Image (cartoon, rainbow, N blue to C red):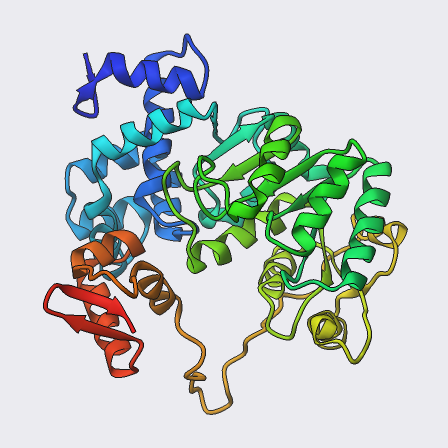
Length: 406
């Protein structure tokens, strides 16, 4: 018997390793399909979410394997023909059975779990992302701790943190653990790392969301920290093992931190810190948002002051005040980067597609447009168009062997 053109015995064995033994054929196919979609579509791909929502992961994968026309896909996912055509062009280069088997083998090697919607360990808050919710999560550690993020607070902040920010984070994380909260963050240097370490030191629950696969902990300097979290807490990602973190995936990872938690607190952040991206997701989801004030002369607190002054974040200074955020109604959706009145875009602010293509390029090795498309999750034609724009801006250059980041 075969599944999706692959030997069914191997598929069942690999799925059992990341799920549990004894699953029926339908459950095995569903798990395999969800594992496949975590690598076929980039995080936050709403078109993939719409298709999986309409047909189920198995039906969506079977349709894609038949190489559907744009109109067929559009009808199935309630998309326009143009969007459907772009989606097929994005996904088709990544429909490689050997890759899915490799992801499953690597996950099994690292004792990672594949957690899907409806599982006891599924963090139900991410369902509020709608079609942009993950189709599955790869988890090292205890899925029950991952599910406890619904009773958690996200503590995020600057990577280049100060002694002041770290002191406030220690007090906040310890105080929230004492009150029974799970600490959710992104395992980055600075505030994130302090929040996780304090939760571990006080015997609390903590969840780390990564932008890359859970087989390669990132940043590498936090390998020991993430190993400890995986031992007693949970480390989760929506991309499969072997997939590297990129700037685009970090931005998408932030939405999971905000969605999985009951509230988000920014403890220290610069004017354009990535933590403000997490704050924007929290606000868009209606989650309560808090910000810790700092010295008015500190650039690393300017983002927190901005959240309070311009976007209605609640000023919080203690763990007790942060705990009060959970029952509150979140402020209106943030637009931290509004368009200029003339409709133009600041040249310093790349578009999301440009970010993805730049992430896919390397400064010293050349890559073909097809390789760039696969790495970025864009259609080949779209990747070529973006490469041309980046070349005009001097941010990419074409060589006889392919394209490089300038």
